[in-house]
Amino acid sequence: MEDLYPPDKRGRITAKGRVTEWIHWQSGTAQLLPRLIARRTRGPLFLTDRKAPAGTPDTRRVPGDRPGPALLSPG
Image 1: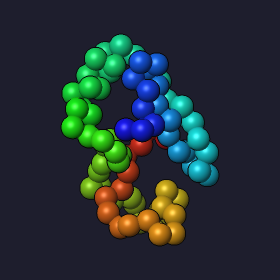
Image 2: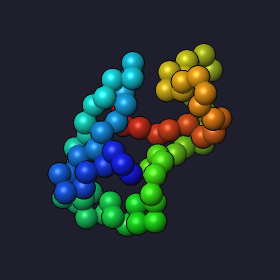
Image 3: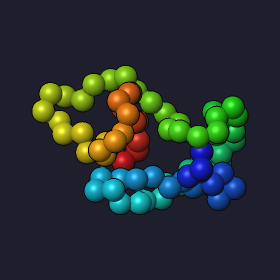
Image 4: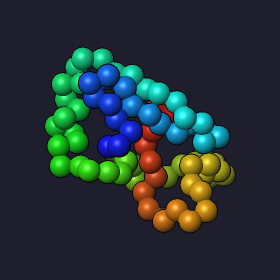
């Protein structure tokens, strides 16, 4: 949640190659976002339990990351 800036309708993400990028959303999302994050204080907002196709390298994890569900990101 620390990377979301609802008043500015934007959020910071880490894209491929550990590059920081900004995503932006429109008014409809801005109205629904508080419901999604109401009780959250930190961590990824959306998760998936879907597996990547065989042979797909997982570039989002770094040494020391805990195992768990993959992050679902727009990038």
